[in-house]
Image 1 (cartoon, rainbow, N blue to C red):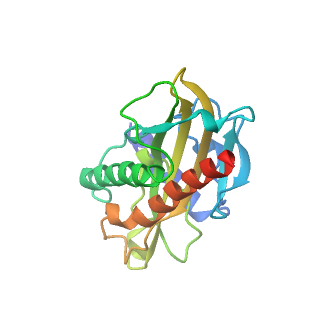
Image 2: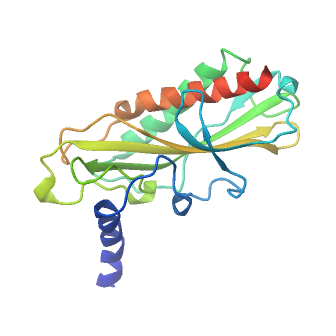
Length: 222
């Protein structure tokens, strides 16, 4: 039992000390939130960021006259920790919800639920991590395995933070999938491994994700 308890931390440590970080979320780090990852392709977002994305080539976005943003999820459901307490997790999803609604409301009226002519946005936060600077570029660690740092000896160094999202876009009339995206981004730097992550550390990257989603919709509409 003790060996099993140590296996996950050792795995995270090995990830932190070897290899090179990708700009894309690696397939082995997909959360399972989306139904089909095989259709994803490497693309660039409107802001120029690396994303894995798929858009139904037959979709007619002009049919959507309103948008419904589902409450964002934490997937898989994480266990709060001293590094990322429940207050921070709640704050991240609450801010993601609000910034998505604010961004989409500039392009479409907000709907109260799915239905004909409604574009449904189904977002999830799937990973979060903090990695000590100077060891390697940060990796996204599945949100259920939040890493506070690789060792106490390096805890006085600054830390990079990162977040990942997966989102599905559906036709509200029949729940048909019309697009999906997987991406990650950097949050604010932490002073050291003892600093607790806060929702504010990720607001900038959440804002970028929301703007990119709306710009992608607007590009398709044109």
